[in-house]
Length: 343
Ligand SMILES: Nc1ncnc2c1ncn2[C@@H]1O[C@H](COP(=O)(O)OP(=O)(O)O)[C@@H](O)[C@H]1O
Ligand SMILES: [Mg+2]
Image (cartoon, protein in one colour):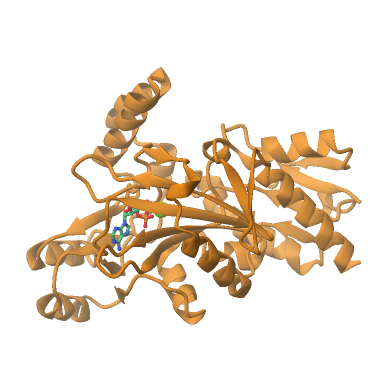
């Protein structure tokens, strides 16, 4: 049995931990380059392929899903699998999926037609939350307080469209990262982005031809991120930025497990029984009046290092196991289990 791993050099990549786990546990693996034109034949001696592909890297964004799903057709086990990955970095796809499995998803409206979108804006109430289908760290998420703001966004969505790379958002995001960590690399990225568009920004076409709004769920200033890997789960709480409604990317993280609503953990396990994802992060916001948790986003991938400070994990019987744990090791173990089952 041999596992192929595509390794990324960026910090917090799952692949660093997968390799470490294989080395420490004597699991046979080989490093492959998924961008090689011979990737399919390169896997001839492997039972599985693992690739932590990113929405932020242009090459990954255009190639990864095609390669992984093609390999899955050959009968090999892949991470992320089709069920785990097809909706990744696509909040509109996630809307359909979460509605289809009857999950508690935030109510939303999607339009592929400008006239219908403008009619809707004329009759609906505000505020709403506007989102591009892709993006992370709240970069492509904004509050829409009025009909006129919604109309401006709709006109843009069916006109020139939105650049995936927004200079102001990029600057604010890295400035906040710098303030939190004092790492000079963040300040370099913040100012660098004002001068040079990221490689991704240059390559990616503008987002247009659709417009997506979610209901604004009034909450107490945080979201809960619950991650399920196989039959285990863990999570954290993220506070919103100052004078803002957005938690993702704020860096204000609370690891205290008593602050995590177990109801969300239970929901995450239950919903994933239907979605059948190998790894899935649910972002919940909780309505401050009704206390109902609503999912605003799902994602198979995340920065591995951010979860090292979690106080423990739950098994799917909702028993909490305090202490450190290794979710990327669980991923490798799950792949081995799947290889054995597939015979
Ligand atoms: N419908 C909503 N109602 C209230 N707050 C929301 C809503 N959607 C998102 N948020 C807030 O905005 C943040 C970013 O939204 P999210 O959809 O998770 O985007 P990203 O992919 O950038 O993380 C969330 O962490 C949450 O705090
Ligand atoms: Mg999010």
